[in-house]
Length: 80
Image 1 (tube, rainbow, N blue to C red):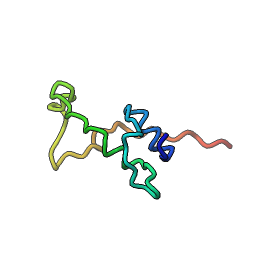
Image 2 (image 1 turned 45 degrees about the horizontal axis):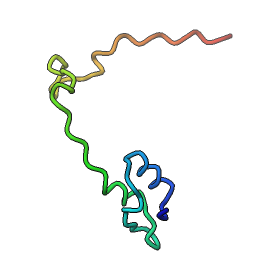
Image 3 (image 1 turned 30 degrees about the vertical axis):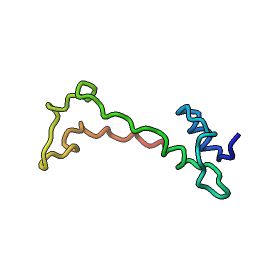
Image 4 (image 1 turned 180 degrees about the horizontal axis):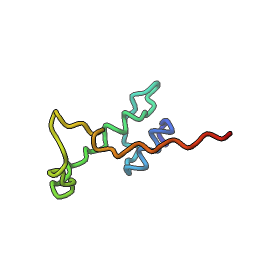
């Protein structure tokens, strides 16, 4: 088995990457996480249908989300 960090081994297992095919760039050729990450293909962008519909959400520079908060709950009475 190739010499690799524990994190690199775990990441390679998650992405079904054979560490024997990875060239390590760490000390003494050890495989590090960045070596494995370089072999992971980028995720495709989300489809429009996968995104939430935000058209009805308040927007704009004048929008302050704190205004949408309800009243503040009164604090519990302290124990005496």
